[in-house]
Length: 292
Figure 1 (cartoon, rainbow, N blue to C red):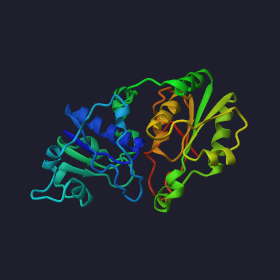
Figure 2 (cartoon, rainbow, N blue to C red):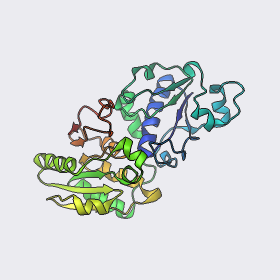
Figure 3 (spheres, one colour):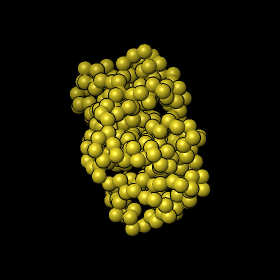
Figure 4 (cartoon, rainbow, N blue to C red):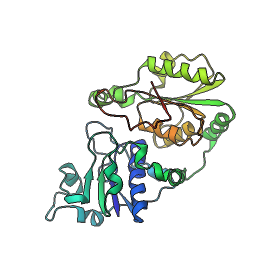
């Protein structure tokens, strides 16, 4: 069995699932998700609930019995404490080091416990089609989301994601991630309009007041702001329905763009993903996407 430590928001959980699912399929074994870290702040991420149940994903949730073989004998402080202090042994536990793609993951044995974010398509590219099936939404869009989906498919639609929220309001998280500045969005919009002059822009943000005040676009614009709380996953569904994409330094809009399987799509992504430019992100964005 392959066990994956699951934490972060929906986008991060999707990266973790995709990497674990690809490795599990390679071994012909089960994928288990360890959810014990969800809801625990780690200094760089806002605590989140488990969100993968909106998809047709293949997994089961790991219990204490499943995790016990990965713990040192005599460990009694509990799974969360165990994860915090990394009391795993040998090749049974594999932690991500740095942000770059690690080719050793595809060679890991069964069983193994994966601990990391695994933010690169390269971990699961060979299983892309199967993962697209896994990431189909269980329930169809309804109401306004269904109406917007139909509209997006009928025009040259472009999703634009402006991520602020905890990147702005939490000093620790903001110091690590940073935000995409206004010039980035202005350049990205101009680039898309050069390639698609009839584009219509659909804006998504956790700070729509800032977007409305600062981001002026000389083309038709729709502000998508009705999906809140547990319904927020619908924004990813709507992003994926668009023809082209301008993403933030966010795994949420990364997946919104990736779920669009059209090979002719234009995806614009920020060249600097984290505040520290020294962090290696060359493997984070697919080669066909445009980084500015």
